[in-house]
Structures are given as C-alpha cells and as structure tokens.
Image (tube, rainbow, N blue to C red; front, side, top):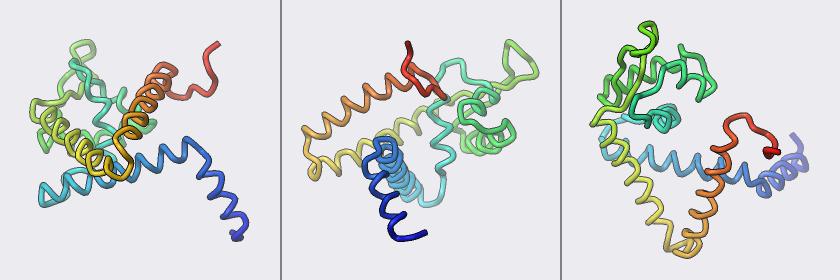
Length: 164
C-alpha cells in the first residue's frame, strides 16, 4: 500500500465516529482484560468472553442459539466459550423448560459477582482517565454514549437506516 493511500485511510478513520468508538472500546477492553488477568495471577478472561457476557443478563437466561445469533457466529463457536465460563462457575447451562432439546445459559451468583468486579475495573479505568480528560468531558461523553446506546439498541442489529 502506498503512503498516500495509508494516509487517506488514517484521515478517514480519524474522522469516523464508528472507527473511534470501536478503537476506544478495543483499547478499554484490552486494558480491563489485562487488569482482571493480572489480579487473578493467570489468564481467566479473554476478549471472546467479554463479547458473550453482556448477552447473559436476562434472569431466565438465554438459549445457546440466541447467543450465537446475537454474536453472529455458529452455535458450535459459542459452545466452547460457554463451557469455559461454566467451568469457571460464571454461568450454568440447563435444559430449556420450553424445549427439552434446547439449552439455556444463565449467570450464576458467582458470575454476577464477577461481572460486578469487572464493572469496577472498567470504572477504575474511567477514574484513571478523568484527570487527563477532565470530569466535565467524561460526563459529556457518558451522556452522549448513553444516548447513542439507546438509539442503537432500539434499532437492533443490522439496522442501517433511521426508522421512518
């Protein structure tokens, strides 16, 4: 790739809200995973786990097929991640009361505590960044991102146009 093309790419990325959000999210996530693993003294959390965990917060749990659909992967890709989290005591897998062939995944009490701890790690990163960004800018970012999250969740995955 020529230097000119690379510079064009970098300019477009720097001006892209989506790119900036994704890259900031990646870096924040990497820092949080590193912190959690350092505290545990061994690797216990991977990026793939962090993509799965937000989808497990329904009290009744979620079907493995629902997790796969939410992540845009196959059921076979989700099953090893669920097995790892079950082995760590984060989730439990049980028969779906509506369909005996299906399995439901739900957080355990330990899983909820682990997610609370993880959220504390995320809050700790925020606290570390406040002196650099300033408390007012952090508040503004949080308000804007909360609003963006509401809009994106209301549209659902794959939505590309505003509703009419």
